[in-house]
Image (cartoon, rainbow, N blue to C red; front, side, top):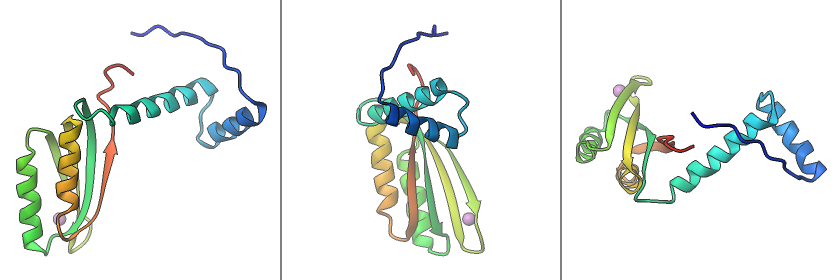
Amino acid sequence: MNSIKRFGVSIESNLIDKFDRYIKSKNYTNRSEALRDLIRKELVGEEWLQLDKNAAGAIVLVYDHHKRELVDSLIDIQHDYHKIIISTQHIHLDQSICLEIVVVKGKINEIYKLESRLKSTKGVKHISLSKSTLAEDI
Ligand code: NI
């Protein structure tokens, strides 16, 4: 368990007023928790710039399953990246549209390659990558 360190911060009054309005709108009960989250968010963003590092995340894609070639392509791609895919969840949004959540854990450059392969597959309507962390040191 990490020990807690306290530090003082000097900040312009208009900036802290704005920050206080921000943390209230986000339902934080104090500045410390809001500040910790902002620091972690920034550090996780930095992690994702280091392509040889490991991370975790989720790719969400939406597509029409009636396009058979598309479904086959998506499955082929996912098999190519089986080493970094730890789970896939498939949700039928309606008669034709599917949403898939592909949970990944592995080298960041491999995750980006997988995202790119899926994104460039013709017929995928939307794709997003949620960049998260293994939280080893934050
Ligand atoms: Ni489906």
